[in-house]
Image (cartoon, rainbow, N blue to C red; front, side, top):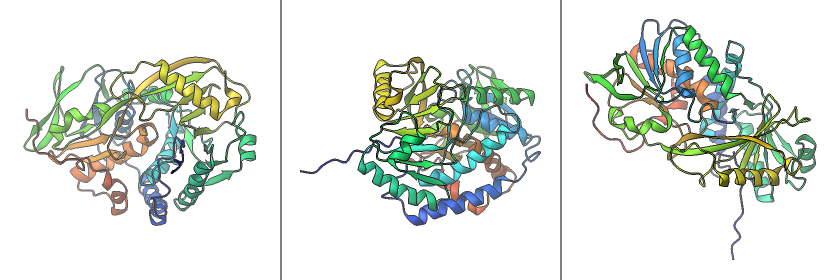
Length: 425
């Protein structure tokens, strides 16, 4: 009789058994190439160009931020409230450790940009406390041993903790743990202040923001996106960027391909402030993750296939019981900590758990940036900045460097079930 080996490593998106050393080493060179490219100043490179951004989550807002800093005239449309899905309702993870190897370079570059943004007016409460993945059995420990090799090759500083070191470093952790692997440079931020700060800069830069104003269709003339139609009428633009997150699929006809995303609820709960955890890193394991907020609370989340598909953002007793049970097993020293609030958001999932990023195949001037599989807050800085380059590659004949295109090229939005047809005025 075979024995099923249980893996409850919540945030290990990489399959350490299937990932090759060549892929891991390439992630290190990809990061170096991205870093060199993103160091270029884009100020003024899009002066005079009109851009409509569809979607006011953190992807759309960050994209709009980098566009305005490049000189574009930006008009943003949000169907509900700004940051209303998961963008303002997430744990604020800005990390590379644990990512699938295809996302490691982007995640590292995005962490660096978040750190830069925190020094240039965005109140994100950004810090780098690290991320510890905790094993509770020998199988999980063996996976972390393999993962350590791959992440080291990818250029991520890591540290393997023995069970005794984990107990000393992580107050309240299960003393029967099998060790932990820590990414020592991983970061985190505070979504609420970050989103609020980005909105304030956009308004100060004269970007036009429409909330509670859904876009009904993309306007096309001569095979080129020329704006959008909403309840406000037609808004003209030189480019349209779809950052509609879980609602992206509704634009498949305009894009000319199946923008296949699936909405799913994601829930979190927050304890009262707990003293003595000032150096508490981001932690994950036993199907949950947790972090200390800048105010001293512990925020706990989990999610996964057991969660409800759809747009329901109410908190459920079942989910909160699940999170409480598994967090108490992972950190028995924190069991019984009072929960003071709970909240939920909607994340969007793609079939291969990679983003949809790039030009729409059926309409010039239409661009896609969505499908971030719950990783949007961490990745948004890099993807927002790269969108400036993506648009310039199409409109100004400034192609993306081959090394950068190699990183983002596999995220093409037409990789799922290409179809024909677009929307006309």
